[in-house]
Image 1 (cartoon, helix red, strand yellow):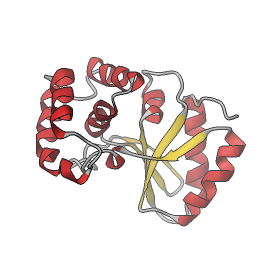
Image 2 (cartoon, rainbow, N blue to C red; image 1 turned 45 degrees about the vertical axis):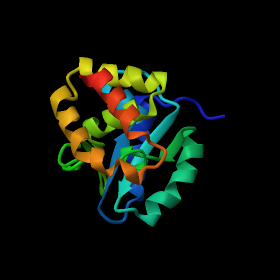
Image 3 (cartoon, one colour; image 1 turned 120 degrees about the vertical axis):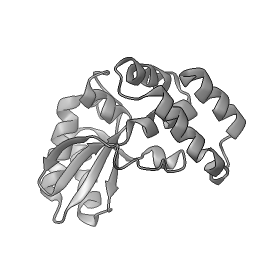
Image 4 (cartoon, one colour; image 1 turned 90 degrees about the horizontal axis):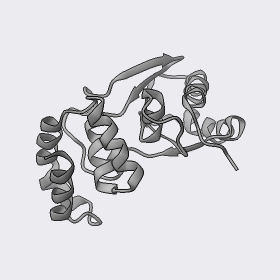
Length: 172
């Protein structure tokens, strides 16, 4: 059984992945990984990441690193839950450079909306922490949601009206 990951383990993972990269790539931290690195949570069950462009050497390195560092790693991002927010890459804060790997937090507005959509208790606590710390702007997040709302049909598991109500309740 792997243990929960703290900021030190997340940093060890991205450092090791950076040494595995043979070509430039960007690794986006998301979910609990962002929460522990920024500091509003001490640990996370999964280190969720997105790699762009996907690099085989990084994907191949992950299973051994999971075992060596005893962390759970998942390839997951807000793009798995919602349509792409316009300009998300430009809003993804830089964290560090590890070898050939730029490490960024996935756009926090996108993370906020995907957490509202998922709606688990931890997700909603994370949204509260992002708002409380000023990491997301309510008005911009609402505007961005309005821009992707017409594309929600691409995600048949989402009830657009119910999601709109949840977004308005959390951000309105």
